[in-house]
Amino acid sequence: MSRIMDEVRTEAAITATIDTLRDVGVSEGEIKAKIMTKYNLSEKEAKDYMMEKIA
Image 1: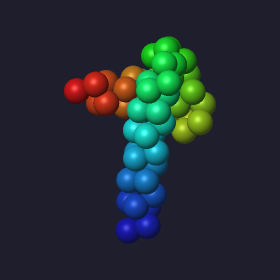
Image 2: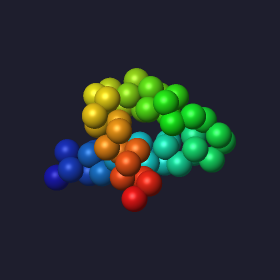
Image 3: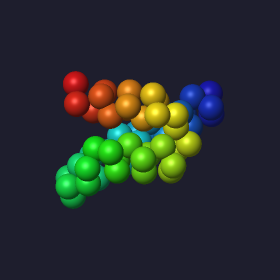
Image 4: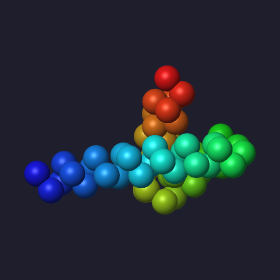
C-alpha cells in the first residue's frame, strides 16, 4: 500500500512541477529535461506526463 501511495505522490509532484514551470514560461524542452532529471524519467515517460497534462 505504501508503494502505491508513493507512486501517487510522485505523479502529483511531476504534474505540479509541469504546471508550475509552464506558468512561469519555461519551454517545453526545458520542462522535459528538468522532470527527466528530477524524477529519473526516460524521455518517453517525460513526454507521456507532459501530454497527459495537455489532454
